[in-house]
Amino acid sequence: MKPAIECFDELVSLLRSRKPALFLDYDGTLAPIVQDPAEAFLSERAKRLLEEAKKRFPVGIISGRGLDDLIGRVGIEGIAYAGSHGLELAFINGERKQLVDEFHKCLIEVESAEMELRCLSESFRGAIVERKRFGVALHYRAVAADQIGGLLKLFEEIASRHPHLRRSEGKKVVELSGTGANKGTAISEIMIHEGITEETHLPIFIGDDLTDEDGFRALKGKGVGVIVRDGPRLTEADYYLSSQEEVLEFLEKLVDSVQGKA
Ligand SMILES: [Mg+2]
Image (cartoon, rainbow, N blue to C red; front, top):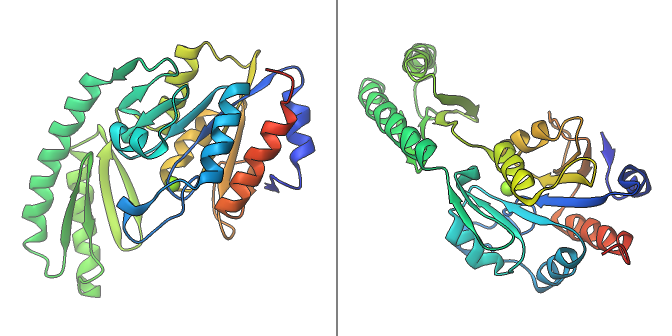
């Protein structure tokens, strides 16, 4: 994997006669990660760069936040937004789309998995079930070490009864969440709606989290994935940036490289 700033000329050469279509995650990519997610705001510089960028090429913000929360935080018209990992979309002209079927199907599945996991957690001291809007997590950090194997085996049984939910894991936590949409489908939806094709544009997606991997995967062979990370990790991205400051530096370079192309 290569550093996006140092290899910027290589990226520019990929553009050829095309313009970029830039998709960005919000938290940890455009805005700093803060203790209280309610306090994650955009800097003035980030806002100014997004305003400049949208005059030159299509821009979309793709987030796990609810759509209205996301739009309220960014507050820029003329760019596309995807909230709730792509379940809610707002296009560049402001038109909105909600994936209602996926939305409901997902909520029903998550509710039923939540009930089963709560039931399971009662037999394992220290197990904690956390309900998220479109998912449910089982934390086992406080479960006795000799019990964890048994707990995870039963979790897998529950997971297998919910094939529409995606199973994922983190540090001492396993999770089932909705698969009706993800950041990759969100990027594809926006590209189709805005008439962005690989002939006219080079799609670029910048993100920092595990859920952003869906976005990198969606752009494999079609565009460019850029991960924001502070150390090596397994990813489908092609390039990396080391901080939110570097994201803004990258954005500035991209805006400058498209000068006069608008
Ligand atoms: Mg993020």
